[in-house]
Figure (cartoon, helix red, strand yellow):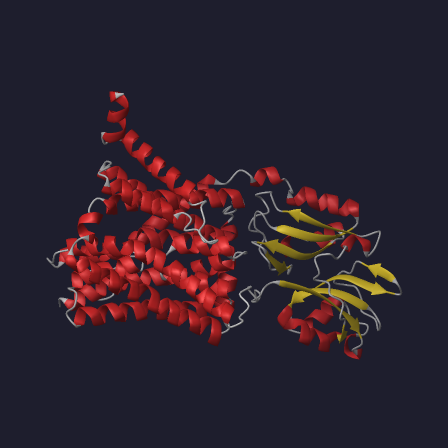
Length: 553
C-alpha cells in the first residue's frame, strides 16, 4: 500500500486533485444533514478543509492557489451570468436602494473596526484581517496585505486574524438571518416575497367606452398615451378578433391587453372601463377562449434570433400572429417591438395553428440546442473579467486600486448576461448547468480556503489575542446585518428574500446566499445579491487599501 500512501501524501498535481475532491465529497455529503430544519449546506466543505489542514494534510502551494482562485472565479462569473438579465430591471426598480443599504452595511462594519483600532485594542494590521475575515472578503485581505507589504509593515498578523474570524464570519451571517427571520415571524411579518418586477407583464382587459378612441386604429390609440401595451385579442359582437395595428376600435369593443401594472390606471382612462376579470390566474385556459385561435409558448433556440429586436422579425405582418409576452429568467415581459430577444426566451404567440407552426420553425423551439452550453462565451467572459479585475484605478493614492479576481468576473458576468445578446453573444445556460458550475466553483474555493487556513488554525486559536479577534469579528459581522436588515424590512418594506440577498452580497458571503436560496423559493435573493455584490466588493477592496495607506501616512 506504499503507492497509495505516496499518492495521497506526496504533493503533486494528482495528489492535489484527489485531496480537493475528497474534501468536497465529504463536505457535500454532510450538507444533507439538517439540525431542526437548518443545514449549513456547502459550508461543511470549508470545515472539512480546515480539519484536513489541521491534521497536517498539505498540497502543492501553486496548485492550492490555482484551484482556490479558479473556483472563486467560476462561481462569481456564472452567478453574474445567471442574474445578468434581471440585473438591469432590478437596479431600475429598487437596485439603487439596495446598494445604498449595502453601502450602510459596509460602512457600519468598517467604522466599528476603525474604532477598535483607534482605541488601541488591536493593531491595525491584525484589525484589517479581523475585518476581512468577519466579512468573508479574501480579495480585500489580499489588497490590505499587498498595501502593508508595499509600506514595509508586517502582514502575517492580518492573515492569521482573518483565518480565525473567517469561519464565524460565514456562520455569523446565517445566524443573523435566522434571528431576523424568527423576530419577523414573531412580529407577524409575511416573509413571502411580495415585490413584483417593474417590467413584469400584467394581463388585463378593458371595455372601449372613451369616445376619443372611437374609429381610431390601435396604432393611433397607442400614440395617444405614453403607456406601453400589447392588444392580444379583441372581442366584438360575440366574436374574437386577432387585432393588428390597423384594426379600428369601436364602441363596446372588449380588448385583452398585456402591459405593466403601473400603466393600468392610465389605460383605464384611455379605453374607458377596466374589466375585473383575473387573466393572470395560472388556471386560465387560453385556447378555450376561441376555437380558431391557439395560444402557444415557443422557445427561442436559433442563434440567429439571439440579440434581435422583436419588431424586426415582423411576425404579425408575415404570419398574422400576435406576440403577447416573453418569459425570461422567471419574469413575464411585455412583448414590445423594442424588446431584445435572447436564447432561452419563451415567447407567447397567439394565432391560427398553421401560422404558429411557421413561427415555431423560425424561432427554433428545439430544447436540445439549449442543453449544450456555449462554452466560448463562458471562457471569453472569464478572460475579460480577469482583465477587468486587474485594471488599475488611480484614485490619487500611493498605489492604484483594483477590483480583483472576484469583483472583475462578476461584473463581466452581469454585463454579458444583460447586454451580451445585443452583440449576438449567447449567454444562456440551462438551470442545471448553471447550478452545477456554481456548485463546482464554490466547493473548490471553500475546500482550498479551509485547507490553507487549517495549517495554522489550531495554533492561532490558542493565542490569547484570538479570543478578542473572535469577539470583535462577531460584532462586525452581526451588528450591521441586524441593524440594516431591520431597517430594510420594517421601515423600507423590502421583502425578506431581497433583503437577505442584499445582506449576503454586502458581506460577500456566497455560502449564506446558498442557505437563503435553499430556504426561500425564487430567484429574488440571487438577483439582489448580484445587484449589490460588485459595488460592495469594490468598496471593501478600495477601503482596505485606503485605510492602510492613510493609517501609516
